[in-house]
Image 1 (cartoon, rainbow over the protein chains, first blue to last red):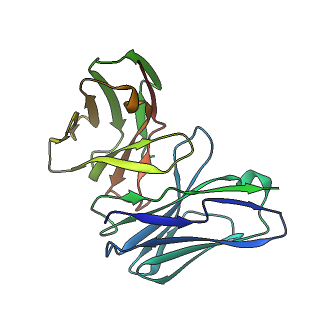
Image 2: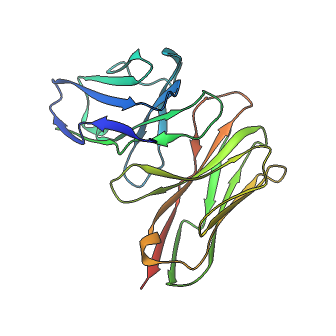
Amino acid sequence: DTEVTQTPKHLVMGMTNKKSLKCEQHMGHRAMYWYKQKAKKPPELMFVYSYEKLSINESVPSRFSPECPNSSLLNLHLHALQPEDSALYLCASSQELRGGEAFFGQGTRLTVV
Amino acid sequence: KQEVTQIPAALSVPEGENLVLNCSFTDSAIYNLQWFRQDPGKGLTSLLLIQSSQREQTSGRLNASLDKSSGRSTLYIAASQPGDSATYLCAVRYSGGGADGLTFGKGTHLIIQP
């Protein structure tokens, strides 16, 4: 099983809403990542978790808040987003932080209105 | 700055042709390089992973090479099919400091004409 599952697949939210994106993997991977991808652009790293500890925060605005409840789950909490935050949000995992093949989920298409 | 560049940005070829996609990176201190495929509006599908100590990897009609000293990788697709149409992304995991995730190129948008 090399699957990373993301929910929901699509999300429309207002600028005052609070929502969460969820990601799950059962490959025993100890590193999990959130990426943001705008249309016709490559994915950009947002957050990295290694052994359930936040390893790097790439200066992402505080309206994005990651959480890693356990080694299989990764959440991204959203609050007071702006229309320019509309994008495809991708979750990925790999065996270790600095090695191994990375597997991506199908993404959550987020639209902020 | 650690960057990844892909050439060409777009490519359209008739079905059956063999083709090569190019990727270059700025720092030879890498853990690995990975090629992905992305269909419109979808997530990324891993095609091949090459560790820094390896020279090439093969999977079916795909062959990826790595020349760390020159900072280059190529993805060779044999006997292309319309189903190969997608955007192909090259990503590098750098080991020389900086972010611990993957650094992506902008991709090659590939169209295989039936």
